[in-house]
Structure formats: structure tokens, C-alpha cells
Figure 1 (cartoon, rainbow, N blue to C red):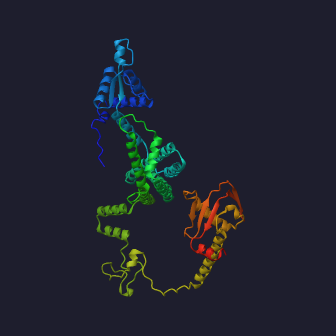
Figure 2: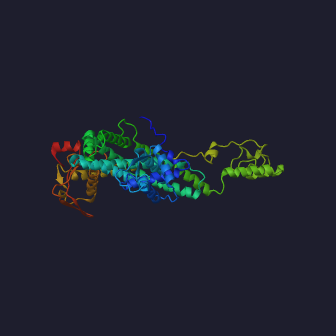
Length: 512
């Protein structure tokens, strides 16, 4: 990739003594372009300057000099207006020359506006953007199958806009997050509230992010199976690009579309098998949550203690330095550390009668101290080994309960095994436990994207039960009675099967 080379004079207007005037002039041209006015005279520029907030007195010579300088920097172009009729020399002087922004001038002012917008904006992690990307991919797949070229173009443009929003917001939020993790010297109350809110925000974003990512990658693969060249060709036809110059704008446009699609793949389904950026963002968010929680714990602990152990020891050391008498120093030592007695508070010598209670600490023999006293605050206690609990009865009870649950589950699946395509209304009345199994299967099927033939498929977690769902053409409604009420919904055509074991059983003898 070639390095970005910025023309050296492109942003010179932002520095110097007259930088405010240069920026205001370009701002005036930018406001005029918003109203589709591409050429301005001296009087028009002066009017636009007042509209953008330039209130200082400005002579014609100063304004002309500023325009000439912008022209030397290739930011402004000047032409003569031959379409007007001039009655006086003064009118000719004011209305003859027309100024307009060059492409470099438009780019320079847009860069300044973008930079100021970035300084004033705040990054965000929005699950709504992920949902929008997933929805636009689904719409794009539908438009490729049955839509027009214009709809393909508009849907692809919306998809790229959402991807750009995800990229920009994620980069800016990550930068602000890292600055927050490094923040020091802030007010503890504000610091605690901001970090606690950030943890809650990150936890909300990371919820179900794997499910959203899986839906996006599935739809990306489906679109690529349709054909990327064909999709971009149809989008190009729908864009209806004008050919204002001698070169074909379609080639550059297609190159930009391919680059944007590669950017989408880099975020969710990299072609080289590398880690997707959405997963990297996931890892950054989880790591930030852990770091913020650790900081919050330290802040809470520091608030709980009026002073830390470090400050206590420093204060004690200061007392040792200011007490002049040796006896007072010993009393301070005994008070602070409690080592004045010859005996340990709860450990005795093998023969305590041989050691006088008045013996000094240096004269008394040592006492063996258990290593657990330092690490766990207690000593070893030796006692009889506890009896091994007999868990045979518990194991038998649990095995019996598991067998009952397995039999109930098998009975539920046997009742739901359709043996072919049927409508939901065919069940009519179901036990509540069986009805819950049916709802679970329907939810798994409806949670997946429809296949090319319009069917939706789903299966249980262990893969033993599979459901194929089709939308009825007649728009019928189904009603199922359960002990807890009445269920009403679309009368889907469904087929519930058990791959392997159940198919073999139906082939050998039908349903039990």
C-alpha cells in the first residue's frame, strides 16, 4: 500500500497571523456549496463571511489579498465573469472576478471540518449498528434474488455506511477507553462513577455479540455464493454514474466497492483466516472490564480504610526517629509488634516448667512455629480420619431420576415426530411439557435465515432432533390447546425428524 502524501501547502491556511480569516473564507465557500452556489464575487464573499461569524471590519484590499494567497496554495480558483453587463468601472471591478473552491480546497476544508467533528464527538459501541449490518445483508440477499439494480445499489450503500459507522465509532471508543484506563489524578468520586458506568456499558455491548456475529458471517457467505462480480455489476448499473470526464468512473467506483467489501470481511470473516476484528474488539472489551473492576476494587478498598498500611509504617518509622530514650523505644516496639513476651501467645515449649515466664526474648529457647501459622493463621491439628460417606443410595436415586427424565424426553420427541410434512394445527392439543419442546424447536428454526427454497431449518443442541419449517401459502392460522391456555399463530408446515436412529426405526417398523 502506497503511503499517503499530502500536498505541503494544503493546510497552511490553518496557521499564521491570518489563519482565522483564511478558515472563515473557506467556511464561506463551504456554506455556499451547501446551497449549490459554486462561484462567489467579492460582495458575495463578504456577505457569506458575516453569515459564518466574521464580524470584523475587512477592507477590499485585505479580502483580495487573502483570496490571492489561497489561490497560490491552490485552494481557490478565479475566473472572469463574461455573462454580466457592467455599467460602471466600479461595478466591473466588484463583479468581474468570480472565485470558487478547487478540489484541493474542498478537500482541505472538509479535512478541517472532520478534524473538529472528531474532537467534539464521542465514540460508541452500538449493538444497533451490528443489527443494522445484519439486516442490510439480509435485504441485499433478497434484492439480489428478486430486486432491481437500483435497490441493490441503495442497499449496498446503506450497508457500507453502517460499516463505516462501526469502524469509526469502535476506533474512537477504543482510544477513549485506553485513555480512561490510564487516567490518573481525577476526582475519586467522578472516577468511580465513570468507570462503573463504563463497565455496565461494555457488559451490555458484549451480550449476545457472538449470536449477532454468526448471523452476519452466514449472510456474507450466502451473498458471496451468489457472486461478488455480479453483485457489484448490478450495483454499478443502479448507481447511474455520469461520465463528466474522459475516463470511465465505473472502474474507480468498483475498486472502492471491492475495498469496502474486503473491509467488511476483515471485521467478520477474514479471507486469510486471521482473527476477525469484531473478536479483537470483544477481547479488548473483556480485558477492559477486568481492568476497570480491579481499579474499582482498589478505590473501594482505599475508601474503606482511613489510612493504608504503607502510611501506618511510615508514621511508625517517624516515631522511632523522634523518640530519644532507649526504654521508650523498647516500649514502642513492644506496643507495635507485641514481641515482649518470652512465650508465643498460643505456642508453648516442650517443657514449659524449664523456661521462666520472666525470661527475656533473647534468652529463651526457640519455639517451633508451623508454616501454616504465617500462610493461614492456624497450626496443624491432627485427628482421626473422617469416615468416607456412602453415596450408593444417592447415585441410585440420581440414576433413577435421570432414567425417568430420559423416558419423558423420549416420549415428548415421539409425540412430536411428524413422520412427514404436517401443519401445526394437526397437533390440536398438547401436554404443556411437549408444547414447550415444540416452541423451542420453532424458535430455533425461525432464528435461522431462510434457505434458497424458503425453508428454515433448526435442530436441538445435541443434534438429535431436526425441524424443517415452511411458511404456508394460504396464510392460515393455527390454534393449539394446552393445559395452561390457548396458543395461536401462523399455521406453519413443519417436519420434525430425528436423523439416524429415528429414521432407521421408521424404515424398519414405523412409529411406536
